[in-house]
Image (tube, rainbow, N blue to C red):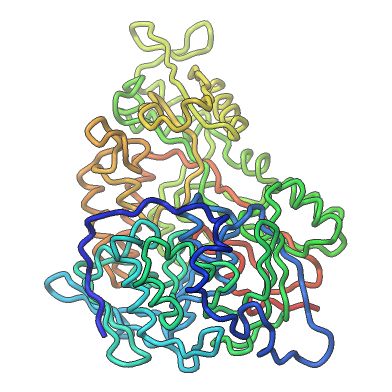
Length: 579
């Protein structure tokens, strides 16, 4: 069996209202198999069942994260999706890619990932023996051929397309447990193409339940009751009950390929208001929060008031100030790396860590966090800037500026040294702290909080004249989109593009292209070190501190970890234990 690339000539409208799920295409809904709304196949262990209550601060609309993203991504949707449907691979809490439904993560070292001289590549997956759907049907390579067919069809591409799929030429199933993907060009995260990859994860679809419905009505495919009340997946938990808008209950999957989960039943409450979620945790009616983590002050309150409560803090991007490199005011910000080096050394970033994250985070010397497995390999490439106001003053004076009577630097013509710093609502305290640091240095700062009416104005957001403060994820996963010259938002691109500071450099572009085309991990890490060196040496981003959020859980729970940016707390939910 082979699924080839489809010509992508059309895009379907985004989904009809999910309120119609209960009545839409009911004839296509799968039969209520054991494990999908039933516990008939459950062989409960001796003694009372182990049960917990979790909560997500949203109202998920489906048990598929890509459908959720198409309707407006909802925090917590990913956690529910991982509970009921495993993929080939998943990212753990430290950023490592680990196998789920397959025997091994493909690498060039184990021979499952091959790159050919003409630039094409091939990835082979071997499905674990014993992998089954919740209804007992074997999970086979034919399911993945079908999944690829759905994701690349013109009618459903708008919802299910994974960014990796644009480079896949064909998907073949030479036998029931082998999947072979042929790629037109290297894609360094090909080993996540059919795994959990954030809110655009392409997890498998059951061919035996969905193929006919898909062929009969592609436009209504996303509205099937399958995605809620009739879900059948491959994950550690089976759906027992779906209560639209309020919550869902899941029971352990006895036949999960990685072993039966240690907890028998999990009730998940949908609580969109965070303060209500916190109140439930304080009252002891919720054992753990899933999806978006809590703010640190909320976590601290729970920890101080709930006996034995525990937490695991997760790194979620870095708070940083992006200098402008096009139409910059003043021009010295763009033209002088010494000026940018002075600005970063004038900021006590450890004080920010202590103040804004209660000492639980670290300084963002670069976009790679020190918890990640390859940080030690690239650390020597990072140019770090200690807090040193005296050195900062020397650097600015070396550029010909002198302080005037008002304490602000001015050039030889008497022009005061000043610039604008923008941020969105929610980061006002960071803006004030940064402005205070630069005011003390002798640089006047105009603080601007983006008003709501301009928050989605992409031209306004792209054309800030001085700095913009944002929290940004670990963009190692999409380096060219974040730093590449062609990704600078300009009038020619209608101000679309992920390069916020609009920095353009041919040498950096060369490194970014080499990184994206280098599959062997050792060589790719060496290139990453060169990229990190360029970014920090040239100070094209003023990293402040790594942002974190908190997963809080009750004293009975063990083996719970905070979420990594590209995963969820549920990545290892089958290993959670309950005292």
